Amino acid sequence: MGGYTVSELAKLSGVSIRTLHHYDEVGLLKPAAVGANGYRYYGREQLLRLQQILFHRELGFPLAEIKAVLDAPGFDRAAALRAHRKRLETEQRRYRRLIRTIDDTLAALEGDKAMDEKAIYKGFDPKKQAEYEAWFVERYGAGVQWSIDASKAAKRDWKQADFDRHQAEWRELLDDYASALGVGDPPDSERVFGVARRHQDWVAHGWGRPVSALAFRNLAKLYSEHPDFSAGFETRAKGLTEYMQAAMRAFADRELS
Image (cartoon, rainbow, N blue to C red; front, side, top):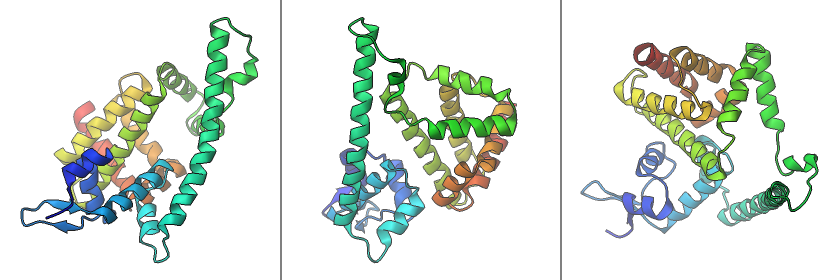
């Protein structure tokens, strides 16, 4: 049977086998055929669809929304690619500004030129980050500012590749929670606890310190209370917010207390 197997497609695209299986489970990327041996086979049409999925993921679209877009009767792949190109050109201009900022900062640090302090932050868009921080402080009190500052300090030496890797791990965690929800795994099952354990490690890496049972429970509460988090989870899979919260609480009670 012709086409790429799931392992071949994973190697070709850089998408993990587990993620491809999840895309199949949720109907986002079905194989062209399944052989008598149970192997999935993907053809050119599936490769092009996966490309669209990856473009939309890069732009921050949740899986449910990507599926709705790609399955819409009037979906035009060429028009979508032109739209992606336009967005990427905008990002390219922003990245060029960031590169210039980096070059100017390096030159200033190495003594080649003076640098206006206002130019240190050219190319960044701090608006959303500031909104989140203000919401946290308003919701949980001024004491939370210490946690915000500590998290920033933990990431001070991160390179862009570190941030990209951290975000990719977050997306995979959400995919795994959604997959477990989709197949009906209880939130306190061993499989889901495995995801929660990776989640705890991911948070600890971002915070730069261990995550206690109380902190993990509070984070679960935050996910349900902040509209951006809950909206993002629900567009990925209906009921995901409540499911993640139950899994995190159960994991904290049994494994962290």
